Length: 83
Image (cartoon, rainbow, N blue to C red; front, side):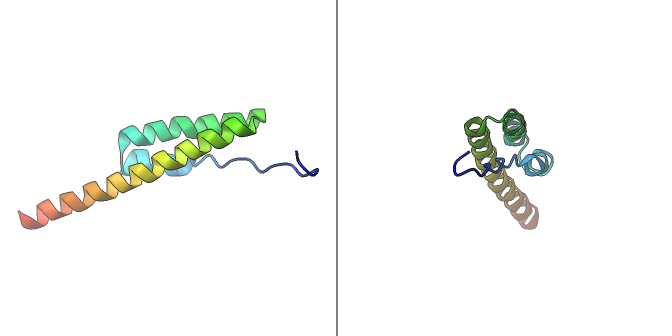
């Protein structure tokens, strides 16, 4: 604690990770869920640095998974429309 104020817990992005697993990109979604759970556990244990690192990784995996899912959906729609 710096200045007497407690630091906010790092976000876990678990909901976003579950959405990505079900709707966008299964492999990246599962990896994001693992990182999200790691961030939640680190927050619970008070390990701020570990929680922030896992949170950052989960966010990155979720962004990549979402982009891959959107690209895949666009490709599928284009193939269906042209065929």
